[in-house]
Every structure is written in structure tokens, then in C-alpha cells.
Length: 239
Image 1 (cartoon, rainbow, N blue to C red):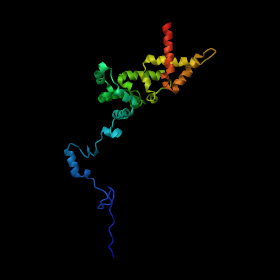
Image 2 (image 1 turned 60 degrees about the horizontal axis):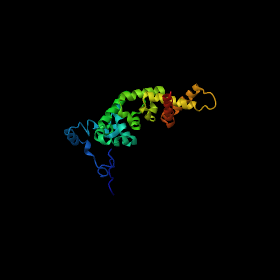
Image 3 (image 1 turned 135 degrees about the vertical axis):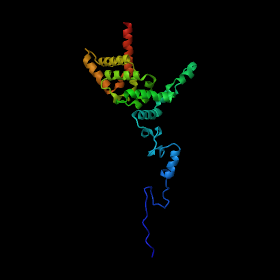
Image 4 (image 1 turned 90 degrees about the horizontal axis):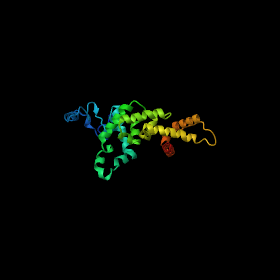
């Protein structure tokens, strides 16, 4: 009769010890830690108490809000068609080399610096800066102060426009203050034109224009609005 076998012991590393179901990882052994410290690390992976994190780990690899914004920016930058077009843009033949050297989209360090400067102004707002910059990379070609001034005016001029809508309508940030005013007036003028065969209720037209811009702020960029702006400009010129 066979003697009873002792119960199998299981370790936290997986299968039973001695069954070769799991290869023991010695990275946490004292000798391994000493070797890592000798190479300049304070522990496993060069970080005392655990593995050192890096930007290569994505959002989990950084700790500050600013660094997280930079990591997210690069994620969006890599998948943005507009950013790719900016990066691939070629200069004029006689200035090609100089313009290529000045292309900020081919200078990762400068791009990061510009994102960081914008974050200093917009970090405590609801603006999704990484997504906004990827949707409208032109904002990285101008001073951060200029971008912020444009944004503040948009908040005043466009009804119901707020930080959470900026990334979706980022193209509005290319417009100067005077251009925004012209386009807001053009939207109102287009609403007035809807009144046919009688007097125009200008106040009601303004309310309709506000409602329209509130639903879709990018209405300011429509071809019909641009055409109305051009028409008004011609009218003023002929006067």
C-alpha cells in the first residue's frame, strides 16, 4: 500500500513549486537588486521600490498634468491628418531649405514647448488642449498669448461657446477678432434675408442667429457666411 503523498504546495508565482510549470523570475532577488544598484538604479528598473516610469509608458508614465498633456498631444499628433500635412509641407523652391528648417512641425522640442506654453494658460480650463492642437495645428504657429486672446473673444462673441466645445470647433481659433465680428454680423444678415415680402424683425433675426451659432459655432466658417462677408465688403467699398 502506497504511503500518502504530502499535499502540493502552490506559490504566488503560479503552479506548484518543483513542477516546472512556472519559471521563477529572479529580478527581485537580492543579488539582482545589487547588480541593478551598481548600474545606477535605486531598485528594480532603476526606481526604489519598483520600476521607474517613463514617457514611453504613456499617461501612466508621467505624473504632472503638464506632462500628461504633452503625452496626449503626441498621441493625437501621430494620428492627425492635418498635423501630417503641416509636417510634410514643402517650402517655395528658392527658400525651401530655410523654410524647412523653420517648420515647427519638424522640431519636436519646439512643438512641446509651445504646447506647454498654451497649457500654462489653459491648464485649468475645460479646453481639451491636445485634441484642439491636433484639430487645428495652426495655433502652434502663433504666440500662445494670441491664441488665448482669440479664444476669450470667441467666448464673448459666440453664444453658448465654452471650453468643452473648443476642440470640436478648433478651426475658429484661426480667426482674428475683427474677422469673428464680421462673420457674426454676416450670420445675422443671412437670417434677415429669410424675411420675404415684408418688414424685417431685426431683433428676432438676431435671436435666430444666436440660436444657430449656439447649436453649431462652426457656422461662422460656412461658405455662405464667407460670401455674405464678401458681399458686405463690396457694398462698403462702393459707398
